[in-house]
Length: 349
Image 1 (tube, rainbow, N blue to C red):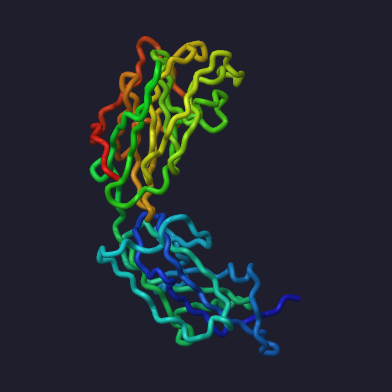
Image 2: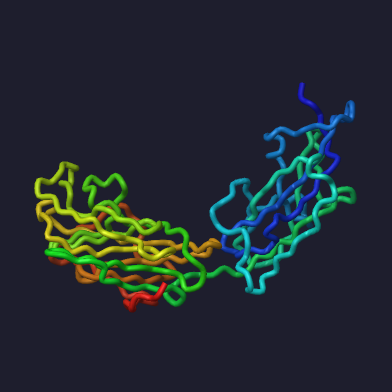
Protein backbone atom coordinates (compact mmCIF):
# COMPACT_ATOMS: atom_id res chain seq x y z
CA UNK A 1 0.00 0.00 0.00
CA UNK A 2 1.42 3.40 -0.97
CA UNK A 3 2.11 6.04 1.67
CA UNK A 4 -0.38 8.92 1.79
CA UNK A 5 2.26 11.63 2.10
CA UNK A 6 1.47 15.29 2.71
CA UNK A 7 3.42 18.44 1.87
CA UNK A 8 4.82 20.60 4.67
CA UNK A 9 6.87 22.94 2.45
CA UNK A 10 6.68 24.00 -1.19
CA UNK A 11 8.66 26.97 -2.50
CA UNK A 12 10.15 28.17 -5.77
CA UNK A 13 13.43 30.04 -6.27
CA UNK A 14 15.65 31.24 -9.10
CA UNK A 15 18.91 29.71 -10.18
CA UNK A 16 22.30 31.39 -10.10
CA UNK A 17 21.82 33.04 -13.50
CA UNK A 18 18.79 35.14 -12.53
CA UNK A 19 15.42 35.65 -14.16
CA UNK A 20 16.02 37.33 -17.53
CA UNK A 21 16.02 35.56 -20.89
CA UNK A 22 15.61 36.18 -24.59
CA UNK A 23 12.08 35.40 -25.82
CA UNK A 24 13.33 33.08 -28.56
CA UNK A 25 11.93 29.76 -27.29
CA UNK A 26 15.45 28.38 -26.88
CA UNK A 27 17.19 30.22 -24.04
CA UNK A 28 16.45 28.70 -20.64
CA UNK A 29 16.66 29.93 -17.05
CA UNK A 30 16.27 27.76 -13.99
CA UNK A 31 13.38 27.44 -11.55
CA UNK A 32 14.22 25.43 -8.43
CA UNK A 33 11.29 23.99 -6.50
CA UNK A 34 12.00 22.98 -2.90
CA UNK A 35 9.69 20.49 -1.24
CA UNK A 36 9.31 18.64 2.08
CA UNK A 37 6.76 15.98 2.94
CA UNK A 38 5.74 13.81 5.87
CA UNK A 39 3.88 10.59 6.50
CA UNK A 40 0.65 11.88 8.09
CA UNK A 41 0.26 8.69 10.13
CA UNK A 42 3.45 8.96 12.16
CA UNK A 43 4.73 12.40 11.03
CA UNK A 44 8.03 10.94 9.91
CA UNK A 45 9.77 12.76 7.05
CA UNK A 46 8.84 11.29 3.69
CA UNK A 47 11.23 11.28 0.73
CA UNK A 48 9.41 11.61 -2.57
CA UNK A 49 10.47 9.28 -5.35
CA UNK A 50 11.72 10.62 -8.69
CA UNK A 51 8.32 9.81 -10.17
CA UNK A 52 6.56 11.75 -7.43
CA UNK A 53 8.91 14.73 -7.80
CA UNK A 54 8.15 14.77 -11.52
CA UNK A 55 4.52 15.53 -10.66
CA UNK A 56 5.55 19.04 -9.61
CA UNK A 57 4.33 21.53 -12.21
CA UNK A 58 5.06 25.18 -12.86
CA UNK A 59 2.03 27.44 -13.04
CA UNK A 60 0.94 31.01 -13.53
CA UNK A 61 1.29 32.42 -10.00
CA UNK A 62 -1.91 34.44 -10.36
CA UNK A 63 -3.87 31.49 -11.73
CA UNK A 64 -2.53 28.29 -10.21
CA UNK A 65 -5.14 26.28 -12.11
CA UNK A 66 -3.20 27.16 -15.28
CA UNK A 67 -0.17 25.02 -16.02
CA UNK A 68 2.63 26.96 -17.70
CA UNK A 69 1.88 26.55 -21.42
CA UNK A 70 1.61 28.65 -24.56
CA UNK A 71 4.51 31.08 -24.96
CA UNK A 72 5.96 30.02 -21.59
CA UNK A 73 7.22 26.44 -21.31
CA UNK A 74 9.17 24.37 -18.82
CA UNK A 75 11.15 21.15 -19.07
CA UNK A 76 13.54 19.11 -16.96
CA UNK A 77 15.91 18.82 -19.94
CA UNK A 78 18.69 21.40 -20.09
CA UNK A 79 19.85 22.52 -23.55
CA UNK A 80 23.18 23.83 -24.83
CA UNK A 81 22.42 27.56 -24.80
CA UNK A 82 23.64 30.06 -22.21
CA UNK A 83 21.39 30.59 -19.19
CA UNK A 84 22.81 34.06 -18.49
CA UNK A 85 22.03 37.21 -20.45
CA UNK A 86 24.91 39.08 -22.14
CA UNK A 87 26.91 41.21 -19.70
CA UNK A 88 26.81 44.98 -19.86
CA UNK A 89 23.60 45.20 -21.89
CA UNK A 90 21.26 46.58 -19.24
CA UNK A 91 19.20 43.42 -18.87
CA UNK A 92 17.75 42.83 -15.42
CA UNK A 93 19.20 39.76 -13.73
CA UNK A 94 17.33 39.73 -10.44
CA UNK A 95 18.41 37.30 -7.79
CA UNK A 96 15.90 36.28 -5.17
CA UNK A 97 16.81 35.66 -1.57
CA UNK A 98 18.08 32.20 -0.82
CA UNK A 99 15.54 29.92 0.84
CA UNK A 100 15.76 29.92 4.62
CA UNK A 101 15.25 26.16 4.91
CA UNK A 102 18.46 24.09 4.76
CA UNK A 103 18.81 22.45 1.36
CA UNK A 104 20.07 19.25 2.99
CA UNK A 105 16.60 18.70 4.51
CA UNK A 106 14.60 19.66 1.45
CA UNK A 107 14.21 17.76 -1.75
CA UNK A 108 14.28 19.76 -4.95
CA UNK A 109 13.20 19.66 -8.57
CA UNK A 110 14.87 21.86 -11.18
CA UNK A 111 13.00 22.97 -14.26
CA UNK A 112 14.23 25.01 -17.20
CA UNK A 113 11.92 27.81 -18.35
CA UNK A 114 11.78 29.33 -21.85
CA UNK A 115 9.47 31.76 -23.60
CA UNK A 116 8.57 33.21 -26.99
CA UNK A 117 6.89 36.32 -25.54
CA UNK A 118 8.61 39.50 -24.37
CA UNK A 119 6.89 40.17 -21.04
CA UNK A 120 7.17 39.70 -17.28
CA UNK A 121 5.66 36.42 -16.09
CA UNK A 122 5.12 35.48 -12.45
CA UNK A 123 5.62 31.75 -12.07
CA UNK A 124 4.75 29.50 -9.15
CA UNK A 125 4.60 25.76 -8.54
CA UNK A 126 2.01 23.16 -7.57
CA UNK A 127 1.75 19.47 -6.77
CA UNK A 128 -1.19 17.17 -6.04
CA UNK A 129 -0.97 15.04 -2.90
CA UNK A 130 -2.13 11.39 -2.97
CA UNK A 131 -5.35 12.49 -1.22
CA UNK A 132 -6.15 14.76 -4.19
CA UNK A 133 -5.41 18.06 -2.47
CA UNK A 134 -3.37 20.43 -4.63
CA UNK A 135 -0.64 22.39 -2.85
CA UNK A 136 0.62 25.57 -4.54
CA UNK A 137 3.16 28.29 -3.82
CA UNK A 138 0.36 30.84 -3.64
CA UNK A 139 -0.79 30.28 -0.09
CA UNK A 140 0.01 31.92 3.27
CA UNK A 141 2.23 29.04 4.36
CA UNK A 142 3.90 28.51 0.95
CA UNK A 143 4.01 31.91 -0.71
CA UNK A 144 6.72 32.35 -3.34
CA UNK A 145 7.09 33.01 -7.05
CA UNK A 146 9.64 34.00 -9.68
CA UNK A 147 9.12 37.06 -11.89
CA UNK A 148 10.73 35.98 -15.16
CA UNK A 149 11.49 38.69 -17.73
CA UNK A 150 11.37 37.83 -21.41
CA UNK A 151 13.26 40.24 -23.71
CA UNK A 152 12.82 40.68 -27.45
CA UNK A 153 14.84 38.10 -29.36
CA UNK A 154 17.55 38.91 -31.89
CA UNK A 155 16.73 37.81 -35.45
CA UNK A 156 19.76 37.16 -37.63
CA UNK A 157 20.00 38.27 -41.25
CA UNK A 158 22.73 39.58 -43.53
CA UNK A 159 22.33 42.98 -41.86
CA UNK A 160 23.89 41.67 -38.64
CA UNK A 161 26.03 38.84 -40.04
CA UNK A 162 29.20 38.56 -42.13
CA UNK A 163 29.56 36.57 -45.36
CA UNK A 164 32.88 36.31 -47.18
CA UNK A 165 34.99 34.17 -49.49
CA UNK A 166 38.63 33.13 -49.19
CA UNK A 167 40.99 31.75 -51.82
CA UNK A 168 41.88 28.78 -49.66
CA UNK A 169 44.13 26.50 -51.72
CA UNK A 170 44.93 25.34 -55.23
CA UNK A 171 47.13 23.02 -57.21
CA UNK A 172 47.53 21.42 -60.60
CA UNK A 173 44.01 20.92 -61.95
CA UNK A 174 42.14 21.97 -58.81
CA UNK A 175 41.14 25.04 -56.83
CA UNK A 176 39.42 25.55 -53.46
CA UNK A 177 37.47 28.54 -52.16
CA UNK A 178 35.96 28.54 -48.69
CA UNK A 179 32.98 30.72 -47.74
CA UNK A 180 32.05 31.73 -44.20
CA UNK A 181 28.94 33.02 -42.43
CA UNK A 182 29.44 34.59 -39.01
CA UNK A 183 27.42 36.69 -36.56
CA UNK A 184 28.27 40.33 -35.89
CA UNK A 185 26.36 40.24 -32.59
CA UNK A 186 26.81 37.07 -30.50
CA UNK A 187 28.81 34.01 -31.61
CA UNK A 188 27.01 31.30 -33.56
CA UNK A 189 27.28 27.90 -31.88
CA UNK A 190 24.85 25.75 -33.88
CA UNK A 191 23.72 25.32 -37.46
CA UNK A 192 20.63 23.29 -38.35
CA UNK A 193 21.24 22.44 -42.01
CA UNK A 194 18.87 21.17 -44.69
CA UNK A 195 19.49 20.26 -48.31
CA UNK A 196 22.80 18.38 -48.34
CA UNK A 197 24.10 14.84 -48.78
CA UNK A 198 24.23 12.92 -45.51
CA UNK A 199 27.00 11.02 -43.75
CA UNK A 200 25.77 7.81 -45.42
CA UNK A 201 26.05 9.17 -48.98
CA UNK A 202 27.64 6.37 -51.09
CA UNK A 203 30.15 8.72 -52.75
CA UNK A 204 32.21 9.20 -49.60
CA UNK A 205 34.11 12.23 -50.85
CA UNK A 206 30.81 13.99 -51.55
CA UNK A 207 29.29 13.72 -48.11
CA UNK A 208 28.00 17.11 -46.92
CA UNK A 209 27.86 18.25 -50.56
CA UNK A 210 25.10 20.51 -51.88
CA UNK A 211 25.84 20.53 -55.62
CA UNK A 212 27.72 18.74 -58.39
CA UNK A 213 28.36 20.22 -61.84
CA UNK A 214 29.93 18.17 -64.60
CA UNK A 215 31.61 21.25 -66.02
CA UNK A 216 34.87 21.24 -64.14
CA UNK A 217 33.68 19.19 -62.33
CA UNK A 218 32.73 21.70 -59.65
CA UNK A 219 31.78 20.39 -56.21
CA UNK A 220 30.07 22.39 -53.48
CA UNK A 221 29.85 21.54 -49.78
CA UNK A 222 28.13 22.85 -46.65
CA UNK A 223 29.95 21.61 -43.56
CA UNK A 224 28.59 21.05 -40.04
CA UNK A 225 29.74 23.49 -37.36
CA UNK A 226 32.98 22.64 -35.60
CA UNK A 227 36.64 23.45 -35.23
CA UNK A 228 39.28 23.68 -37.93
CA UNK A 229 39.94 20.31 -39.53
CA UNK A 230 41.11 18.55 -42.68
CA UNK A 231 38.74 16.35 -44.70
CA UNK A 232 39.12 14.22 -47.81
CA UNK A 233 36.80 15.62 -50.47
CA UNK A 234 36.27 14.67 -54.06
CA UNK A 235 34.88 12.14 -56.52
CA UNK A 236 35.87 8.90 -54.82
CA UNK A 237 33.16 6.35 -55.65
CA UNK A 238 30.50 5.48 -58.17
CA UNK A 239 26.96 6.49 -57.25
CA UNK A 240 26.27 2.94 -56.01
CA UNK A 241 29.19 3.05 -53.56
CA UNK A 242 31.81 1.13 -55.58
CA UNK A 243 35.28 2.62 -55.44
CA UNK A 244 36.05 4.49 -58.65
CA UNK A 245 39.23 3.24 -60.39
CA UNK A 246 40.16 6.84 -61.28
CA UNK A 247 39.06 8.38 -58.01
CA UNK A 248 39.99 12.02 -57.45
CA UNK A 249 40.24 13.57 -53.98
CA UNK A 250 42.20 16.11 -51.98
CA UNK A 251 42.75 16.67 -48.29
CA UNK A 252 41.27 20.13 -47.82
CA UNK A 253 41.20 22.45 -44.82
CA UNK A 254 37.78 23.64 -43.64
CA UNK A 255 36.32 25.69 -40.78
CA UNK A 256 39.33 27.94 -40.27
CA UNK A 257 37.20 30.53 -38.44
CA UNK A 258 35.51 29.76 -35.13
CA UNK A 259 31.75 30.15 -34.65
CA UNK A 260 31.17 30.27 -38.41
CA UNK A 261 29.32 28.20 -40.97
CA UNK A 262 31.79 27.01 -43.62
CA UNK A 263 31.02 26.15 -47.26
CA UNK A 264 33.45 25.05 -49.96
CA UNK A 265 33.61 25.36 -53.74
CA UNK A 266 36.06 22.78 -55.05
CA UNK A 267 37.04 22.73 -58.73
CA UNK A 268 38.47 19.34 -59.64
CA UNK A 269 39.93 17.37 -62.52
CA UNK A 270 38.09 14.27 -61.42
CA UNK A 271 36.22 11.59 -63.40
CA UNK A 272 33.02 12.56 -65.24
CA UNK A 273 31.26 9.19 -65.31
CA UNK A 274 29.74 9.15 -61.82
CA UNK A 275 26.56 11.09 -62.72
CA UNK A 276 25.22 11.77 -66.20
CA UNK A 277 23.67 15.05 -65.07
CA UNK A 278 24.67 17.69 -62.61
CA UNK A 279 22.54 18.06 -59.51
CA UNK A 280 21.96 20.43 -56.63
CA UNK A 281 19.98 20.84 -53.44
CA UNK A 282 18.35 23.98 -52.06
CA UNK A 283 20.53 24.23 -48.95
CA UNK A 284 19.52 26.25 -45.90
CA UNK A 285 21.08 26.82 -42.50
CA UNK A 286 19.31 28.06 -39.40
CA UNK A 287 22.04 29.63 -37.30
CA UNK A 288 21.78 29.87 -33.51
CA UNK A 289 23.90 32.10 -31.31
CA UNK A 290 25.00 31.20 -27.79
CA UNK A 291 21.71 32.53 -26.36
CA UNK A 292 19.42 30.66 -28.77
CA UNK A 293 18.66 33.62 -31.05
CA UNK A 294 18.45 32.48 -34.66
CA UNK A 295 18.09 33.31 -38.32
CA UNK A 296 17.59 31.18 -41.43
CA UNK A 297 19.80 31.63 -44.48
CA UNK A 298 19.42 30.18 -47.96
CA UNK A 299 22.51 29.26 -49.96
CA UNK A 300 22.74 29.07 -53.74
CA UNK A 301 25.30 28.16 -56.38
CA UNK A 302 25.77 30.83 -59.06
CA UNK A 303 26.82 29.85 -62.59
CA UNK A 304 28.41 26.68 -61.22
CA UNK A 305 31.33 28.55 -59.69
CA UNK A 306 30.46 30.80 -56.75
CA UNK A 307 28.19 30.54 -53.71
CA UNK A 308 25.83 33.23 -52.46
CA UNK A 309 23.61 33.58 -49.41
CA UNK A 310 20.35 35.39 -48.80
CA UNK A 311 17.62 35.37 -46.20
CA UNK A 312 13.87 35.77 -46.26
CA UNK A 313 10.97 35.76 -43.86
CA UNK A 314 9.89 32.47 -45.42
CA UNK A 315 11.88 29.89 -47.34
CA UNK A 316 11.56 30.11 -51.11
CA UNK A 317 11.99 26.34 -51.35
CA UNK A 318 10.72 23.76 -48.85
CA UNK A 319 13.40 21.65 -47.12
CA UNK A 320 14.20 18.56 -49.17
CA UNK A 321 16.68 15.70 -48.99
CA UNK A 322 16.17 14.98 -52.70
CA UNK A 323 18.55 16.57 -55.22
CA UNK A 324 17.33 18.33 -58.35
CA UNK A 325 18.94 17.40 -61.68
CA UNK A 326 19.92 19.95 -64.28
CA UNK A 327 19.25 19.84 -68.00
CA UNK A 328 19.62 22.30 -70.83
CA UNK A 329 16.64 24.34 -69.63
CA UNK A 330 17.21 24.21 -65.90
CA UNK A 331 20.31 25.77 -64.43
CA UNK A 332 20.59 26.47 -60.70
CA UNK A 333 21.12 30.06 -59.82
CA UNK A 334 20.61 32.33 -56.86
CA UNK A 335 17.18 33.87 -56.48
CA UNK A 336 17.12 37.49 -55.51
CA UNK A 337 16.00 37.78 -51.90
CA UNK A 338 14.99 40.74 -49.83
CA UNK A 339 18.62 41.01 -48.78
CA UNK A 340 21.28 39.30 -50.87
CA UNK A 341 24.93 38.95 -50.11
CA UNK A 342 27.95 40.36 -51.75
CA UNK A 343 31.28 38.73 -51.09
CA UNK A 344 33.50 40.86 -48.89
CA UNK A 345 37.16 40.72 -48.08
CA UNK A 346 38.02 38.27 -45.30
CA UNK A 347 37.56 39.89 -41.88
CA UNK A 348 40.26 39.88 -39.25
CA UNK A 349 39.57 37.37 -36.47
